[in-house]
Amino acid sequence: MAVTDQSQPSWGIATQALHSGQQSSPQRENSLAIFPTSSYTFASAAHAAEVFAGTAAGNVYSRFTNPTVAAFETRLAALERGEKALATASGMAAIQTLFLSLLSQGDHVVVSRSVFGSTATLANTVLPRFGIGVTRVTLADIDDWRRAITPQTRLFFAETPSNPTLELVDLTLLAQLAQQHGILLAVDNVFCTPCLQQPLQLGANLVIHSATKYIDGQGRVLGGAIIGPEALLMERIYPFIRNTGPTLSPFNAWVLYKGMETLPLRIERHCHNAAWIAKQLTSRWPKLQLHYPGLPSHPQYQLACRQMRQPGGLLCLELGSKQQAHQFIDRLQLVTITANLGDAKTLVTHPATTTHGRLSAEERLSAGVTDGLVRLAIGLEDAPDILADIEQALR
Ligand SMILES: Cc1ncc(COP(=O)(O)O)c(C=O)c1O
Image (tube, rainbow, N blue to C red):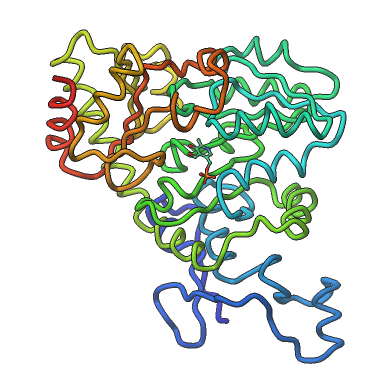
């Protein structure tokens, strides 16, 4: 394969999204080829032994490496301004790989309280079974993170803005605290994508993605990734992936690679639509409780302005009770009910009974997931049409 990746670190994000990780075969195709192969051939038994031993370059088996997956990894690493990315089969595969490759029995991890439901379940129920200590803290409260540190703490895990409460943490301060104590900081950057926030530039060591969301952008496939320093990824994380198999398929890698080509453009429109709808709802429904980091009423508005290039495409309504939340959702006509986000279509979710439904009521509340909370992942439709649907359902 003739590799033609000529990406320059000086390129802007839209150029990176279109040209980094570019490869072509002798066919000189302009759009990335898919290599749906589980294994690769060797010229001789000796060659096979050399490639297996790592003394000769080459692919061995697609659980280890695959050219289409490698192109996806190169492009995502360029967007996040990281040295390397390792792809996984889903966002949760990335998070469990991160935990199980970096933590051992007796180690301790600090995880913010407001995180995606499966991440909370993984932290609360799976990690303790392997003798890994977990402390949950208030995302925004740096002192809470500081108090949670023990001599065994190896990892901080934060999601900012968090799913679904849209709470933020000051990544520069959190990274400083982690560094002072020799702790690695991993950030789930799903809600922002590298278009809005590059945590590695703010001092984080590792970034996690569910590529299923905005990176795909049309709700088609699952995928995930871990991005960070090459040495850390290759020494600690790659052996875990290679030997346990949470591998991304070539087809999904291709969809996600192509998805990145329009990511900056789509994120602009998601943010534009969400900001406009948030503003309209605030002025037309003054009693409505609305969470959106782009509104001055958001408790961390100043931090959002500093840390994120734009406030993102998600907004949440607080409707008072489960019954009112369900009624509102059932009245929507254009907006579809799913547990996803980052799709081109506007989606609605009731976190308390879906994505966070397996947590105890107490834990949901401590993470800010009230029964009346409704999450809207604003899509790419004409903003007045989305607003009209929300307003008719509110009425
Ligand atoms: C913030 C966040 N992280 C991780 C995940 C898990 O990703 P996946 O569904 O690709 O496993 C999700 C899924 O909704 C998410 O919202």
